[in-house]
Each structure stands twice: as C-alpha cells, then as structure tokens.
Image 1: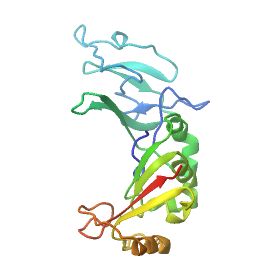
Image 2: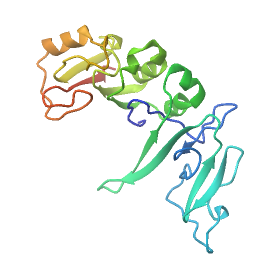
Image 3: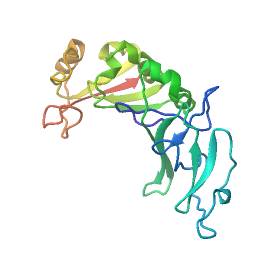
Length: 230
C-alpha cells in the first residue's frame, strides 16, 4: 500500500533512482534522513559528538551517511529529489508499519522529474484516499496521477475534489456515496459534477457524522467509496 494521497503529496525512494538523477526519502531537503532499509533506528553516540562512520551502510554519489544529535541518517543529493519523511511506527499489536509523507509536484510535468510513480509502482496495488485536493485530478495536466490511482487502487475513498466520477467505468468500479453532495465551494467554480449529484440522489446515501474536505460543516460533507469489481 502506498501513502495516502492528499493535495501536493507524492512518493519517491532513495534506492530506486531514475537514470541520471538521485532520488531520496528526506526531511525538508537533503539531511536528517532515516537510512532506507534499516531494521531499527540507529545511533552514533561513541565519542563526544559521534561520527557518520558509526552508522551502517556506505556512502555513494547519491547519498552519504550523517550523524545528527546522536542519530544516524542519510544526506541525499538534491537533484531530482522529493523532500519528505519516512516514519516507522507500531500500534497496540506491536507490528511495525511504515508511513511515507512527501512534498512534491504531482502534475504531469512534475512527475517526469521526481521519480514519484517509479517508487509508488513498486509498492504494488493498494488503497487510496484523496481529500481537499484543489480539484487537481479534474485537470488534463494531472492525468498521469489520475490514471495511476485508477490502475493501482483496489479501493479509493475521496471527496468530490478527487477523481471525477466520469472516469470510473461502471463495469470496473462499484461506487458507494456517503454524506451530502452540495457541489464545490466558491473558490472552485466550474467543478460541479452532475453525474455525482445524480449518484447521491438515486442512492440511499448514509449520512456522515463527521466533517471532511472543504465542506467540513455538519451535514455538508461528502465521500465516495470506489471499489474495484475485479
């Protein structure tokens, strides 16, 4: 499963470089990164200040080891990167999980430079979530990320700012609306979807007991659950 997608998010990985570029999982640029593939958080505390050579791995032209405040990390070359963070955590069952959060340009032009889809594609199929996305998936200039999500998502949850309903083929997707569709807020004129409105009105639509997206006030929010039929 890949990270949840919201407006402006993306994915790229330091060990899956696009030819001619150096891509990375980084915190705010190119420092303080958790070493990719590490089994646990590593420290570099020997001596007064510690040293990068105490950290596992080796240095390459795309990444070098760092030792910051006693914690091992990786500094990545800036070219072709998507700044972000890798978070490893566990719930009450103690099983480790990984969350990637990125800041990157997911327009068609931006994806050509970042390596986003190369990394995300290697994660396989998964579930996706889109909210408050500025209606970017409605535009032709964001067709690549839209097509990727339609191809790789087993289930997709979104508000009306996500992928327009006309792209969900009836023979491939099962659609379940939740809440109330009132159309876009004033900042996004021209994004009203008649097809989505018809779906909400002909379905026995369950109410939402929480707010989400741009219309977050009670009894104004909408969500669409799209599930692959095969």
